Length: 430
Ligand SMILES: *Cc1c(COP(=O)(O)O)cnc(C)c1O
Image (cartoon, rainbow, N blue to C red; front, side):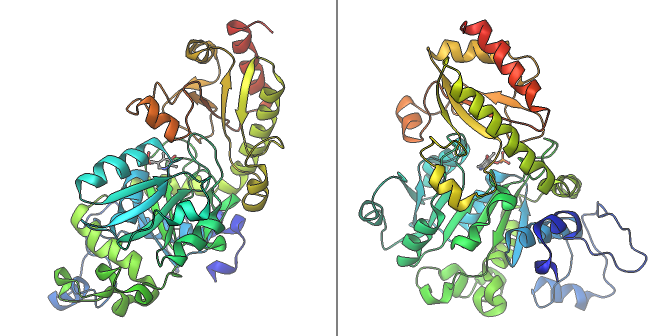
């Protein structure tokens, strides 16, 4: 029933389905434990022979309701909430990669993910090759190895705002027998559903637009159920061979299309435990109830701000895929016909100092380590989020030293533009 509803209705009504006499509003199950009548019932849960709640590290009814709303919005078969977007991306990869394995990621991705893939996963023995999205098919295919297990990209990259050619990379990944994992944080399922273009797994930092109010850090992994793990069983022993830590259960046999997400829950969440708190899932659900109203407003405001910036001679460059002059305009028309998101990357004429002075001169718009919420905010990645990266790595990640990331909120757009104007006037006279 859920899949037949439109995205707008799913935002409001998806997930929680109260039975007779139950609360209409999603309740916060603030409980670590769940009661059973006898020992046998509990044992069956531990053997994964029956589904049911027993401990919140594995599953919680509040979280499950929100996860099922997100799964429905993305057009997937199931989803799992995680404590953060970082945890979501780590689990998404680690669920199918182990020491000795390799995966490929485009290089224009969120700085935290770049570190996770390039540094921390390496310590676990998992190697990542970063490729440039502009490379030819031949160049990209040369990056695949016999031990490659997946391909990763972001629908709209944070902070560079590049648009990912999902269909092309799905084709390349599938040609080499591996799934495409797409971080859909910035677009949200309101503006793009990567599964419709061939992606197999979608991840989110729900901290951003989904929550939308900057109240709770969280993440999600959504499974399309489309990837045929058994067709490449030799690549994915974790899914297609018995799991000794679950009495020899084989996920693909026991759960079919749900194998990937069941393993992520039953094994990774059990052992690594980055669960989202039910309180945060409740806040996330409130955010989701208005996602379909907020996203168009973010896009409308960002389009006007991007056009203003493009026409101001003090601005050196603007990257927003809604601008006709933008390199990603054509891709955006294909994947994001209703708008991309509220995030704009731009640079001022002058040096890094001008960028910093501009940001310090803003009044309503705040400098915060955040992006994609209702309030317009600004950040200088080279001195903030991406501080750990060398100039060379910054360049590789598509981040110019003068890049200002402006996250356009849902205030009145005239107030946003006025604030930018007065700050520009303080730095460089028109
Ligand atoms: C913020 C972000 C993350 C990390 O999410 P957290 O919730 O901060 O852990 C991952 N991917 C993208 C695209 C992001 O914007």
